[in-house]
Image (cartoon, rainbow, N blue to C red; front, top):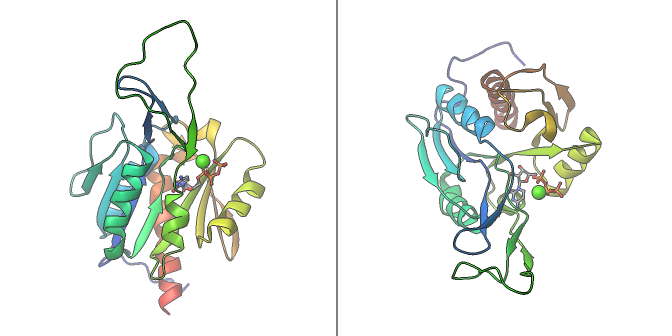
Length: 222
Ligand code: CTP
Ligand code: CA
């Protein structure tokens, strides 16, 4: 790959990321969510910023401090996240989908707190839009990076996911290993194959993903 490394490999690039979980209300005090600390997505936002990119981060609810010099948009539900992403994606060169988006939302959401009664409440679900697949399918799609959190058959499921969503680069990790932790061991999947990275702090994983991303972008324009 030429061996020429810039200190700011993403200089001039606009990067849009999602991070954290989404929250799907059942009523005014209860909801459905996914387990996600947001740490991997926030680390990637910082790594992209440090690589010279202009970064927009669409974040579900997390306990993290928004990174400095990153335009952070706070959202709750998957539909909020979908709308924020579609509003921003037109000016983005890269979309990195790290969020643990809830696959379903509550159809019969109550406008008031549900009271305990004689019968159990019945929660009806409907499917949320797939934000990554939607962005990857846009006519002028940015370069898309997806994540796959699996609990088994990691590389097989991740490879299927990469093909199904038509994303050039996918980051596979074991959910039980990554969730909430400060370290992560991931495998990058692209057209050239599988690239396992060592187990290391999420900040280092993020920097390695950014290096790989920058090389992929260069190959595309060469
Ligand atoms: N994703 C998304 N919108 C959704 C669901 C997922 O943008 N409604 C993105 C995630 O941010 C991630 C990738 O798609 O980058 C894979 O998410 P994952 O939950 O692993 O895959 P799913 O396609 O939802 O399949 P499943 O949950 O059944 O494994
Ligand atoms: Ca999912």
